[in-house]
Image (cartoon, rainbow, N blue to C red; front, side, top):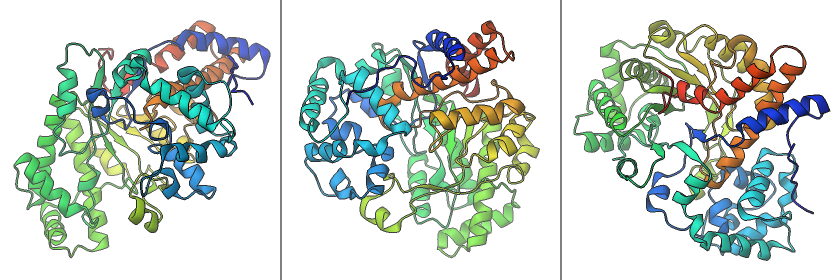
Length: 469
């Protein structure tokens, strides 16, 4: 079976609407990629080394691919996440189960990558697995397949990474100071390890923060000062945003004496679950307060149960496909934060969810009132043509287009970035085309919105280089 190469893929089926959508997509198909939220390691771009092999390029690091194969009976040991495995065998496992990805966004991303990057023409299968592996390996070995060359050929203008507060950001500084590199690789401050004092990693994280910043974190006030200092370091290295994931978005303000009591209990290993939850909610409030002062855009994506299967975590570690969504609410949990900072001119909050029932019920109305709040694009489990369309239908009535974030690729899979952005551009072109043919938008205005969705809107939401003044 040949890979699909339909120039109108993902566009509406109605011929009149499809013509409008195709014209809109033509307008934006070659615009630079602005990626304000992702997980590519900056050292990949700095070191500019060849990718290791096809399996470690496309399969092993991609939790979307891993979880689908694992769900259909392939142990993670056979996918390179346990003992070393011949990468060709990993590829064969993947190729023999290509049919499992039918109808999924992963299939759309992979097909586009196979076709437009590697020049493959056939679906992977058992018969052609070795031939395709060799073709991808030949592509890897070519001089133009190094990461820096791909940043240029993919036209990635902005690439935000995700970074621990204790990171020295040396890779970002080296890229920023390299006169031969003109793109923006920006760090993003990810403080999750410091929020929940009942988590096993919390005390180790506090010690590492002390070592990195030279600030005594024996008190909650000291920990807060240390985080503020590290945020300033991130800003100096080009950061424009933070990224925070919690099980829920509750925010509260604890009295200083109560906060310090919980902090002492946490350091002693005796913190109660209720106190730990209150501490986490206060720290989330503190992060909002910091953003109102230093201008870093606060991204918040609650509602994911991390590492749902303990046995998989123990054997293979995190980011192996077993983070699972849970029901989430925003309106009441965020009220304290938004009472204090929701109309502050320097505060900006981008809200993401994997519980799409909150799009129209809570996130869009919040973005439709608070100047600080932006509706984050469909993200993780929803970053599909259907999910993107449902997002537009749910959010546009209350928030419009200009209080959304622009597309978020949220990926470690570097080669999938162009394909993911193209899926978003095609889906948005289809939605805008329907507004045109039903008389809700003129063609000229729809064209401007399509263009802004890939440029002005993400640059504005994330205060990125090139954002309008």
